Length: 245
Image (cartoon, rainbow, N blue to C red; front, side):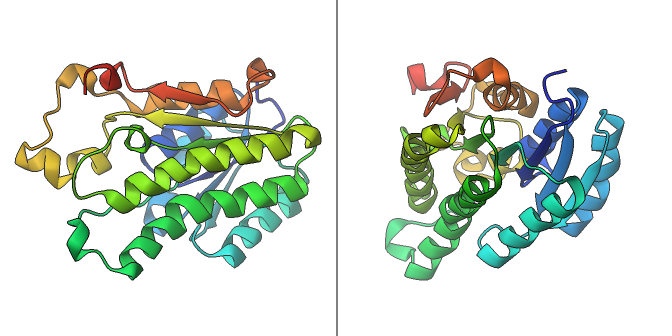
């Protein structure tokens, strides 16, 4: 199994793509740290990840926008397992407002989660991971092709790609790999709660909608030793949706 004896932190790990990723890595032998802001979701996710095959699961309440909470999650991981092999930066926040209605606080709220959260965990990875470690950032096709009402989210996800490239350059001499995935329309509440989708402004062809497990499979590849020569990549997981947007 590719993740036998390895320890992986997954942010936003108690639901959606994060939970699917936790289950996938658990099925391949990983010890899983679920970092999430929602305690109820954590309580439900832990037994699911255990049933998927994880030898051990550590739930950690964590607001990724707060660096002290990120540091606490990493410390708890190291205290319990003595190592950290991969970080999956999946936690995300999306809001829907017209540009002229956005405030600076609106922007900071999204950027703090979607961009700074990924930075804080990448920083900790650089401080504590040994050579062979991996970071996978979950960006979005909104980084390259977006729509109305989501300017902060699109900007943050584009910045995550830049963070990935910069981190890959600085991580390579440390023996660390940093890559990103760009999910398209994935069957999660974030998709169906999108007011553009609800109103029909954004048309969703059912054939364009992927499953969280599809993204989890791509993340598992990038986090594994199978991707040992993949560095700074941007892997589309969108079923070809960008080809005809």
